[in-house]
Image: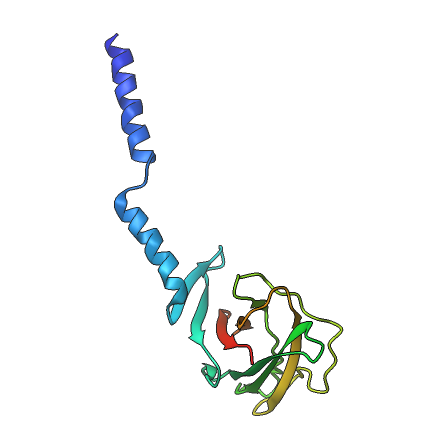
Length: 178
């Protein structure tokens, strides 16, 4: 009987230790959710221990600068003439010291105000597509379109870049639809 009671006591202690999260764990989870709107966040990626840096709260006329590598600015977001897609116009510059490094930038994801991921509109034609640029060169007014899912007055435009140190740099521009 004593052995049975002892085993039950051990089980209770184990269950208590592994069971419900402590209040401080809940607070940490809430802080993580709140950090989604912070200026920058560092996250560890997988086994290769590469850092992912996400910069948030960028808007029109704000320049994202990855030091010594690139500059990027979203110029505008407008409805297409046929009102079936959003046209994103942006400018980027290759600031790399490496003469052989070419740069081309396109949004990785575009989200509407309900956080739906928008699909790229492959039927959109523009003379100003994103193009590869070499050291010191700029691609001005590159345009890309994403299909309209719901009426929205703001889009989140996310770009990603693999920097020379192997880390992934990301930026999210919160852009009003003009």
